[in-house]
Image (cartoon, rainbow over the protein chains, first blue to last red):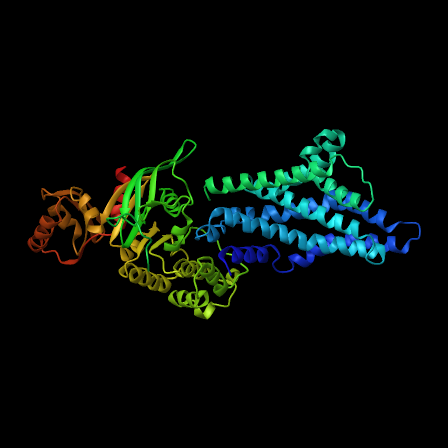
Length: 243
Length: 314
């Protein structure tokens, strides 16, 4: 196993150590699965519409940013605060590789929690596999959103101790309030990118979802923001003094 | 233990060239230059003297504000492969509490890319006498045990340069003695070891060469005796216990080399510019005055006194 892979495995273990995985998974799954159970038992609710609404109103604005930012800000940031990061940086591993392993660990930890919960909610509501386009759209949007939020979280954690607070303020206040009031701000909204990706997949399945950003714009912006955050994070880690 | 290939002519293992580090208006280290070659070197200084800043710069954790830090003739910045040859025991705890001793040391071995990480970890654990606790979680260990675990992690890849920041913190006297023996052994094997401490008795037993940092500057460097020579023109203190110290004091104060004499019960403390002439005159004075000498010793032979002198001189 290469040093980077060992570092990735170790970092993932740190993020999901002990009962943390079970607790976080339950906290994410319950608000998705429990309503789905009630929706499945109701005759007047369309499962696909219900799942899509739940995804757009709960997963995209709350669960996805909270989970991805929590894991990403603690992946490297908490080790910088408590000093344990020196165990990793004083090794023959380039700092970009250390950051990459920490980033991937945060992404994988987030997806391990989010994807099964979303799939379970979808399957329960539909009473089966349901719309595969909807499921694919949700999962892909979640992956794109996780990549972007995690990159943002990594960057913030290298600049400030309260990175999670600032990240959540961005997700809940900027994306929730400001973007609603000023739609042009969508180009600076990860939530806007994920909705654009979701809309692109659903459009392929014949469902027309109205979003502020088109699929191409959303994908390009998500890629640019993710890469820019990671490049800045690498530069910061290479230049910063380690406490 | 191997060192990376350096420039021709075998450069020093560590070389600081006018290294300075400041944070805003606060100067942590100023204009520090020294070289280290194989063997054990002690880095002395009180808290806040700049020891940890210096060690962190050597390890590449801090970037110099000015000057240069070279390891094996190369700047460590942007050259992570140099860490193959460096083992570091940083300050503070810096351990993963959920890991066991064995898994922590093995993690270090694996991140160093060792072919047989398990065997290397077992060897390092044995070197610091932690085998009985190898399967214990780090959060349940004493401070001394955690320090020894950090040392095992630092030596697991048999580095050519070992940097230890206050490594004996929390160790009991027995552990300290074994640790000192281990570091001396490592130093005699050709490894360059730099050990910081503010407890001079420890460093005196560990290192033949010392660097003394005071207020971010190099106050002295060299071996113990060389530094002691710095004090050659300074008065030395001699403690004398006798059955009539007051009478003896009156005779001693008359000696031309005596600076001062303090009497405290049956003991006196004399400050003299010449220990040799003092030692010659004292028995004669005692005989002439009918005093019986019970104890005569100098009190400032330890590094502690050297250190206090250097600190006080600045």
